Amino acid sequence: SGGLLGASCLTFDGTNDIASIPDNGAISGLSLMTVEGWAKYDADTSGFSYICRKESEYQLGINSSGYFYSWIKEAGGTEREVLGTVNLRDAKWHHYAMVWDGSKAIGYLDGKKLGEASGGTAAVNNSGNVLSVGCRDADATASSWMKGSIDELRVWSTARTVTQIRAGMFTQYGSGEGGLAGYWKMDEGTDTDGDDEVADSSSNSNVLTFGATSGGANPPSWATSGITGGSNGAEHGFT
Image (tube, rainbow, N blue to C red; front, side):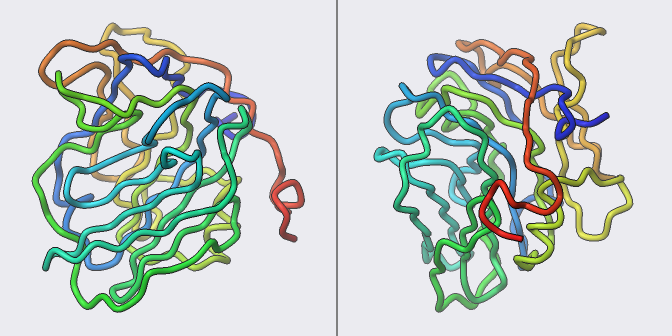
């Protein structure tokens, strides 16, 4: 069974837990892009808190009010963000997604469109930075720690439609899925070989590793996922 069927996720303590994914052309500077994943924020999470963040490229998480927050920087330097209006520090699983279709950034929560920021003409910026997971900047200067859990993190080199996002929320994919640039199921459940990492289930082998890239922080922990809802999406307000 997979993470959406009751297997594992990663949990972060909100203090100094870090994971990261190395910079790679498959997940950087994309002309079309979707970033999505499941997250559960604890009620006492404070400040900005990131599911994932690639410095000067894209960010997904919540802002200081606990609202959905997505941010994309175009290659020319223009920044596009989408904000929600509901406090998500509720200790419940929610599905987060942001899409760049080459002209606008679109934000989705639990399969429902929150808004868009239009007017773009460029690809997403290519910064060369790592993709930080559960914090801002996965090194010794990290901040904006997540207090909660993350599961099923994906980066696509396509602009996923709302129909695809809804269908995929409760689906696990194989490595041959078209446009799947990076995919971390987080189904390992334990560290059996001492490598503290999560496999990339896309074809790009871009492994997620635990701890800071330059010391000074701890790895996240494994926990039971517990995501529920079913493929009809009724629990999340759409059918």
